[in-house]
Length: 299
Image 1 (cartoon, helix red, strand yellow):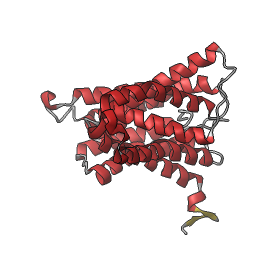
Image 2: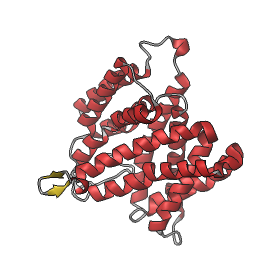
Image 3: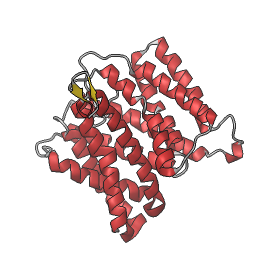
Image 4: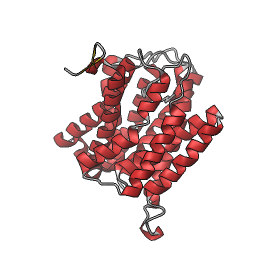
């Protein structure tokens, strides 16, 4: 077994977060293969239902005794999560996953920069915007051939991600442990399941679709949540932010290996700019703060 200073690589917190990053993006690539079969709504419904089932096996959230304010906050949290997934999967149906994830990453990046109010972070966001312009093909593709809808969907997913982060903090203040995300996902699943059945029909329950849906639920939710929660017991928030900044690159790799998607040199340069900007903004240490994808917080 490969090791780092006296510790197995598999148990090293950096390795765990990297595995989580790769898991999420390969889950996204797997989702892209499901979209032509059951559509965007069906894919989101399947992911939420199966991810909720897996999560509730291990987390038994307290539902009774919640106040109206609690339900209001977690309800908005569910809206943000569900809308984020719908917009992101919609963008995956039109754009390479590396492009979609890079554009989406602008949401949490811009939020972190605004909250920090540091000039350096603002400059990093400007660099990221240049990067997104390059990766979207806006400078090299004729306007008539540019997939504006796909770009807007990815940007909308990023905006929903930023809202998700804000609402996750409010939910975390009212719900213990993973109770908030468990209830949030259940609410999204309850709303999306009938709509998914209406749009995808009985094909939503075919063996192949269910198997791929289970893989997406595991790779995009259960596995990364677990790995990050284990890693963050021994990892600084700044280091976590730097590692999470590699998500666009991991998405490009997943797109290449799973979907055969190849990005142009200018798109790769744009991705590098976004990753570098993310390292600057998300890599700053935050005292007393431990977060994971399960809580929605990046720094």
